[in-house]
Amino acid sequence: MPKPEHEFFDPSRLGQRSVGGIAGLTETILTEDPETGDYTRLLHFEPGTDTSPMGVQRHEFWEEVWIVDGALTDLSLGETFAAGMYACRPPGMPHGPWRSEAGCRTFEFRYYRSDPA
Image (cartoon, rainbow, N blue to C red; front, side, top):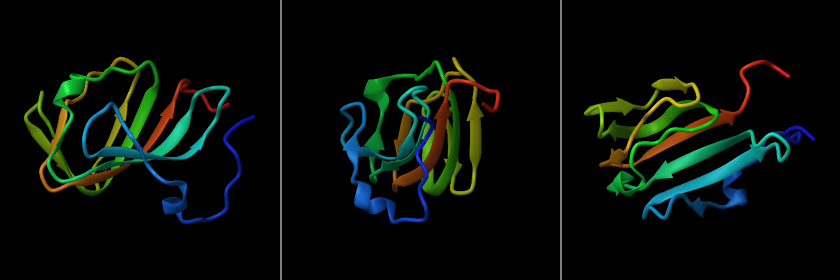
């Protein structure tokens, strides 16, 4: 079954879970396809969150990220990215680790294929 159908709803009712054992880093999975592993999530960085223990990330899937609010600094690049900015990362593209001084929230799509199914 593909991602389920959802009409508008308040995502706060879904709750959050920790990510990678990093203090202050949580996600809310909005929808997912259990067959493909594709999912959409909100990722939340509390002020001061640092993902250095996770190191540089590389995924086997496509990842599209829009920064909803706040800002993130990619510690490898030494660049800060702010609300309204967008990234599209193909499988294997290195990124992070990240630090967010004032906090940040991103909206992300992760999927394993590039063709519309």
